[in-house]
Length: 163
Ligand code: GDP
Ligand code: MG
Image 1 (tube, rainbow, N blue to C red):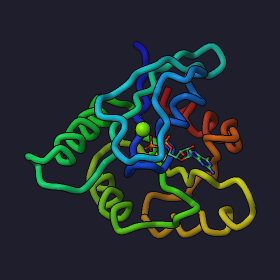
Image 2: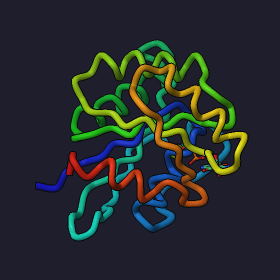
Image 3: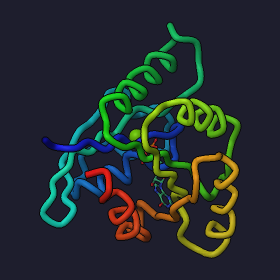
């Protein structure tokens, strides 16, 4: 069976950039405008000889169930439900936001392994800020830079037990 990894997080944290980095193609649209990814996008990544499926989800925006944000949120949580492990991204440059905290609380309630990624961690200032992510109660944040590829070997090593 092909295992599945779902990429989660609020808009603009770099989910689509990480997806493209893992899948090795510019398949997901990367944009500064929040909410560009409306539907889930899937691709195949490889860890050594083990292939696994990666799902880029829409940003987990807070909002009422019947709103667009609410529907996007449901799609993302559905993506997690179907996955073997979730990658929860936060932005080490902006720091932890109330929306990150809300999503983290929801993820802690799921019985699903979650790896916490502090993205945009290139550079020393962001590296120091990334430690803030410990406060989310999801364990040790892995420092990565989806744009530059920093931390990818560590990320793949952390994923290995779930694949
Ligand atoms: P999404 O909304 O979570 O899918 O985020 P995107 O992948 O569309 O990225 C949002 C913005 O963050 C874009 O301008 C990216 O170029 C930028 N970005 C993504 N990853 C990194 C990173 O590792 N470092 C920096 N500095 N910027 C990044
Ligand atoms: Mg996106």
